[in-house]
Length: 259
Image 1 (cartoon, rainbow, N blue to C red):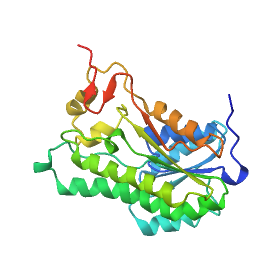
Image 2 (tube, one colour):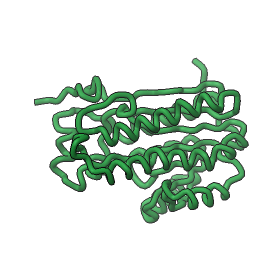
Image 3 (tube, rainbow, N blue to C red):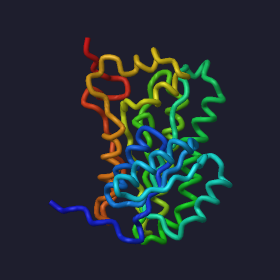
C-alpha cells in the first residue's frame, strides 16, 4: 500500500476557517499533528487563541487570526500575511432554522448563503494564488450531504450547501492542470456541541431530538480524520468528493434510531 508523501516545505501552512469549535477545531488539531503550521480563523478571538495555545503546548505550530469570512476586505488583508499557503480548509458555515419554504426566514437564508457560499468564495479567491505558488496546494470544501440531496424543513441550508458543492465542482474543472487539488468532504449526521443548538436558536430540546436514539453519530474528530487523510494523500491523488456518514444513517431521511 502506498504511503502518504510528507507535505513539502512550501506547503506546510494550513488555514482552517471556523476553527473555534467542532469540525474546524478538530481539523486544526489533526493537521497540526500531521506536521502543518495551522492558522486558525474564526470570529471568536478567545476560542481560537485558546486552541492555538493548546496546539503549541503539544509541540506543534499554530497561529490564531480573528476573521469574519463574509468580510471581503478583512479576508483580502488576511491573505497578504502569506507568501504561500499549502492547504485551505473552508469549514466555516452552519445551519439556521428548519422551517418549510413557505415560512422560512429570508434573513436566515441570506446569512447561511453568505457564510457557507460567499465565505468559501472569499477565502478561496484570496488564497488561490498563494496555494498555486506553493507548488502543491489543496483547497478543501467541507460541505454536507445536504449539498447532494434535500429533505423537508432544510431548504435554506440545502440550497447553501448545494452552492458550496457546485463551487468546488466548478473550481476543479477551471484549474485542472495547475498544482492545486480541490477536495470536497460531505459529512452526514455529525454531533457537535453547537451545530444543532445554533440551528434551533439555543433550544436544547430541539437540538437533542436531532440525535435522539442514534447510537453513534459522527463526531468532529471523525470528520477531521477524514479531512486530514484526504489532505495528506500523495500530491497526484485528488479525493474529489468523499461522503462520510455514521453507520446508522443511510440517507438524509433514513436514520436508524434505537427505541
